[in-house]
Length: 519
Ligand code: ARG
Image (cartoon, rainbow, N blue to C red; front, side, top):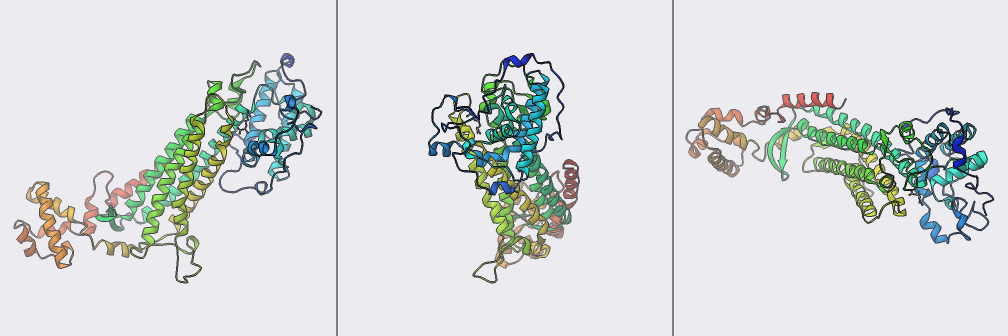
């Protein structure tokens, strides 16, 4: 029975002749950038369990929203597998924002009366306030955020609420909500990433000339500066920002009005709703946009790559903080103790950042597989697109913030870094280059001679620059005093002036350029 039936009010065709009037929304218009619970802060409502199944149903037990052709309600297990409200209530701001734009357009097109449009807009804003304030009772029986909002709207404004769903379906509605949410998440993530980049730039500037061993295979290779090393991450994160921006560009088309899958006979204006919601244009194919989630896949792919970059930096922090290195320290703010070993100070935040990427790559895999076997168009499988996306988004928001905190917190032990450059014959390449430049030796030959000198220094337990000239000349008689000028680590880094090299002046220039790029 549709006694309570929110869909029982006549919708449709005969109203299309109502004269179009400009919609005046009562109350503040939602900002197009507002989104659900972004970032990592969950509102109080997330902690409140939703009402159990069975409430708000028609007397037959069938759904008041779509149960007209059903004689009985769903099995408890059906309700359990079908309901998504515990996850998608996070879309409430986007859902209401989309509904406001849709209703305004319906009025403008003469599909809804001004009075109904005003009542709907007013009611939606009241619903939003209730949810904002944690006063809204989410109901599992109403399945998802769309029907929870609409049902409450009906309670607040009566039959006009039933006209809101004219010329749309939950399929285009959820596709729109989710795009808005991901777009907002990209914007938030971009701000957070910029902050991390600035933290790195500041530390890089401080240490533009701080020498340390540069590694390949985690074996000492050539001297670099700590600033140069940090700037490598600025480049990686800069590309991450670029990937997010690319994804945003492709994502920014509006599915609203595609309806279930085929479009609608109502004279809607999809360009108007797209514009009102800050989209560049409506999506071009109704079947595509209700069933595609590649915007979320791209977002998760970008987050996965970002996560891998953060994980590498986290790993370096763990290594640099380890006893063998002691290149950096982290304060009480970013370390933890052990419950059994009183002396311990552990880089847990870095380890957690290193680990979190697993969740993000998992989310990407999960959604890829949800989409992979899906025939056109919408399938309920797609409902499970949100949980992994939200979780991955939260994990990365937390990781980026924690990483920025650690980068700002770390104390850099420049002395230890310099001391570490004493080992590993880091300037062996400089020596070989000198042989090439000064003695016009072919590089392969110079490489061999240098190898012999390294062996000699190793057997004497000294650095290359501590070898006696006479000992060097026994290996290559043409070597003279001039060679010693290239064997120090400061000379070595200062000589690496090729574009993108580690010379402190280069590093300072790179930082300046990056400050321009990431303003
Ligand atoms: N909760 C659904 C989802 O997230 C909304 C769309 C439902 N559409 C449908 N045809 N049952 O995908």
